[in-house]
Image 1: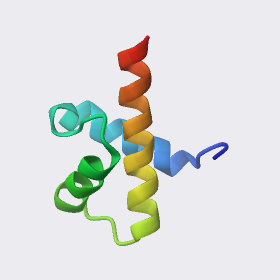
Image 2: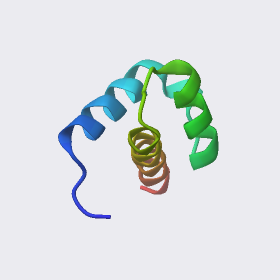
Image 3: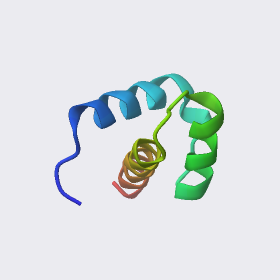
Image 4: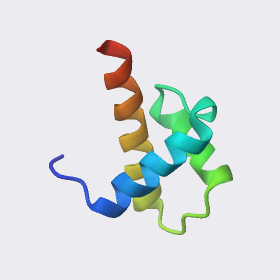
Amino acid sequence: MGIKPSYIKTMGTALLSTQKENFSNNFDVNKQQLATSASIDSKRVRNRIAGYITRKINTKRHS
């Protein structure tokens, strides 16, 4: 998708550092977890953060 905005990266890494055990390598599970744990008004921003978290977890698992 290209370069992600800094607010997506900042919020995603902050959530991963504080709530890593709540997130998995599944996008849909992460999306539902974000709906309950963070107050994000925009559905698009929530989905982009969930995608960023999913990608970070998957790349750490493969390396």
